[in-house]
Amino acid sequence: MAGSCGSLALAEGEPAEDFLKRLRAAGYYDIALTYLDRLDQSPGVDGSLKDAVSLEKAQTYIEAGVNARTATERDEYFAKAESSIADFLKQESHPRAPEARLQLGKLQLVRANTLMMIDPDDAKKKAARESYLNAAKTFDTIVENLRSKLKEMQGEKINADENPQLAEQRTQYRADFLEAKLNAGDARRLAATTYPNPAKDGKKLLEEATAQFTDLADNYGGYVTGAIAILHLGQTQQLLGQTDAALDSFLKYLEQPDAAPLREGRFEATSALTQLWLAKSPPDYQPAIERGQGLLDTIRPNEKRLPAALQLKLDVAKAYLAKSKDTKGQKKTDIKRAESAGRQLLIEIEKLPGQHAEESSKLLADMGVDLTPAELPKADDPENLEEAFASSRELYQLSEDLRQALELLKQQKKDDAEHKKQIESLEKQLADTRYLAIETLRRGMTMIQRGADLSTLNQAKHFYAVLLYQVDRFRDAAVVGDNLARTSPGTDLGLKGGLVALSALQKLLVEVPQDENTNLVAQLKSIGD
Image (cartoon, rainbow, N blue to C red; front, top):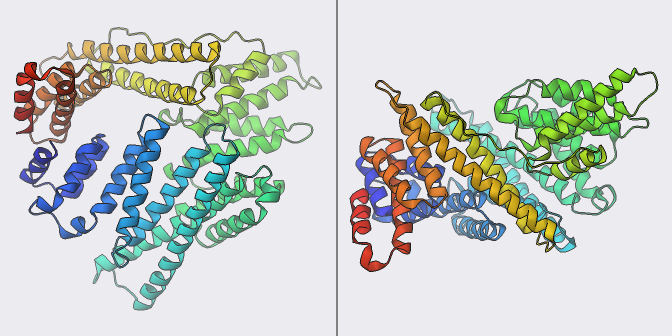
């Protein structure tokens, strides 16, 4: 299968790097790995890519790990990625060595974060701390290596017009340098959080992190990395108990341009401000409401499910509830309005997975709110294909949220009846939501008229094939994927459709007895060709 995909890429004249990116983006990690294993046999592939096979494998393992369905699978992929990077770094003089070290440090951070995700015990916290500290060392090495390289380049006075490649390399080195410096501080800050008392037991780490962030904020404020460092400086100061300094840092971050790379940080900074204001005695809820609600009123569609946005909703809800309990100098209508606003925010987020969920449920229960299962979207008849496609994507996103929540719930390893009931309920919601996504898109695809937008139609076909594959309807997925591959040959979506069909047919070959799979083998060869 990978050989067929490789031939397709070469036949179309597509660079191998782009082909790999598309395979990974489509989730075909096994095919990407097989393709890399056979890269030496592929004519016309750039030698620089062949020299970096281990690094490309590592990237593939990392992406597979991020999308793994279980924690065990995720760890296995990450371990393979770390091993692949170590193999690559044996080529110390390779131009992509700095990139590899940066990737290694990020991987060490991710593995540590994974250990800290769900009620970590002391052993997991210790293991996470070690991984954070290893990441800090990796990033420190990157910073020093790139610092010396940048100094050498500074002395050479590179002219971008005369030597564009060297100028581009300098720009990349600078970006990697700033990112490594930021991550070095983050690794120390996060390592400190693994202690029972970060301000006491992790004080040295927090002070080192403060130095890193301060340097970035003061000297590289014109870069995105420098702006992000202001936020992380505030978070570090908050851990150290330096409330006034933390408030100043968070407010300074919110003065930065409202640019896309800084949007999520705005939610984090506003949440932190809200928490600090509410921690005062009495709680200073009014600025928390004004700041928090003001940002929530501008929330964008793609931000509604961000963990930071959900956390901000929780924090603003707590500010409203604090206001509702302040009976001095307030009208009864204002008190009721504040309680209602807080309750509504909690209801909006309580059923969505994330660290906010448990506290949201508790606050609602304390208010006497009857918690009922979240109502699933109904499969109303769409008006056209475009509406069906949009609705099915929304349902798919909901199903992914449910799947993640189910995975987290199963990892808790409880054996009581209530826990089993919660798992069964989520499993049913997940199955229903996936069914609705498929049914909605199926109905939309029956509404295709002459002159319909082929781009939307092909995207819908690919998405339909993926949804069918996800619920183990492999025969249907193969039919839809094969149709897309044959009607859109040589296109990105055509390739994706063919890959879905290949994967589905391979699954069927495992399930169908050997004496009955002749037709499947023929189909597999036909699509591969």
